[in-house]
Amino acid sequence: MAKIITMGEIMLRLSTPGNSRFIQTDCFDAVYGGGEANVAVSCANYGHQASFITRLPAHEIGQAAINALRRYGVDTSYIARGGERIGIYYLETGSAMRPSKVIYDRAHSAMAEAVPEDFDFDAIMQGADWFHWSGITPALSAGAAQLVQAACEAARRHHVTVSADLNYRRKLWTPEQAQETMRPLMKYVDVCIGNEEDAELCLGFHPEADVRAGKTDAEGYKETFRAMASEFGFRYVASTLRESYSASHNGWKALIYDSRETNPECQFHQSRHYDIAPIVDRVGGGDAFAAGIIHGLLTATPAQAVEFAAAASALKHTVEGDFNLVSAAEVEALAGGDGSGRVQR
Image (cartoon, rainbow, N blue to C red; front, side, top):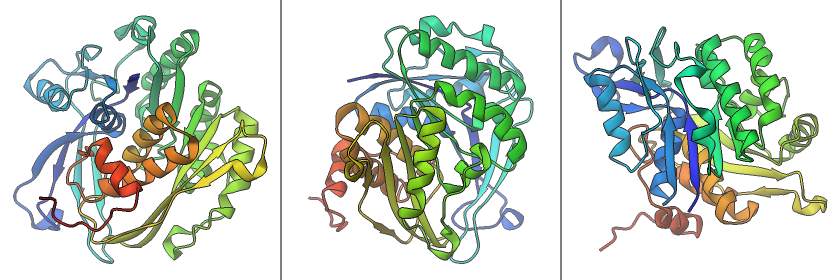
């Protein structure tokens, strides 16, 4: 299988039990997670050699985060140790019409204060097949944005495929800041992943979609995908199409655009639709999709890749925690139509 590198910040996640609110709980459930770390875990679960790059403090909480990755087969040998603190985020899981809420406590984290000199990117990219990052990382700090650029430049030197999940986070930066940083980084990207909000706020494109009203017709995305690929040279553009009926009930499907396909009828591939209710934990759903796209494009056709990715991310909504703890066989079973949920004996 492939050697896949991901880079970002792994955080301590503190969640209120069940659907309790921040103001009513007196305890939190602790797990570890973060966009690119979640992708690494999924890729390792699919049998790839997955490595994660980050910077963590040299204390027990930093080590616990590393151990969480090692538990699922992720290579942590490229992780730098240093800094004072690990990033934290608090999660209140919503229900029905009450949305989930996230509160960040990640300023001045070890990864936010990392510099390119903390990593030998040429050594890391040697022999790699794929490098993945997301828009969360350059949003952390100017130094973290420099890390992304340095890693992408090394990936380009070593002919490594690069994917980026745009992953706009309004609590980390403004659309103006995002576009100023993200648009120049797109010249390194082969596979661009992001939903309609990401495309608009990170890159300035405007797909015709209203997820709150359940309007995610794939036709509204096609011209936007073509324009994005034309401007930045992407090989593929992929997106989930979430229909958000409530915090507990979502519709789910996905779309991929193959810019190298000359036949217009074969350029776009849409996955089957999933009706997800009740949702157990939607955090990490986009990361599960990104990992599914990476695995799918490495092992199958674009049409098969988007089916695998949509099924993988649909399954993530049924798994508590950031990590998508499912196997390739389980994803393939769902993508093949087995969504009955019957007990396996």
